[in-house]
Length: 139
Image (cartoon, rainbow, N blue to C red; front, side, top):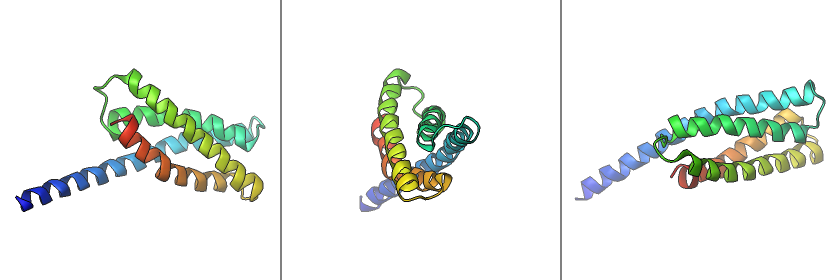
């Protein structure tokens, strides 16, 4: 019995690790969209780094939601509207965390805006996005 419980626990651990790996890959893709939009807004449209961050985070979130449903958490058979509402709540908070972080790290600490965004995005993704996606949005 102990061997069976241990094997089941180990299997869940590997499943979580694989899901986390897919989440990180999906985050990289969504971050590419996010950063591309942010940089385009700042460099081409002349908007502030904070506003560019909000725009990039919004489009990156749409990319990440699609990947989360279909590939990362494989919950595409569930009702998309329910997931979308939960995802929107988590993404709104994530966008706020990212914009606040950009303000603190870029504008107050004077770190170059793309580097500041990368540092903040990594922290928000690890501490906020993965747990909320796994246990709330795509449960």
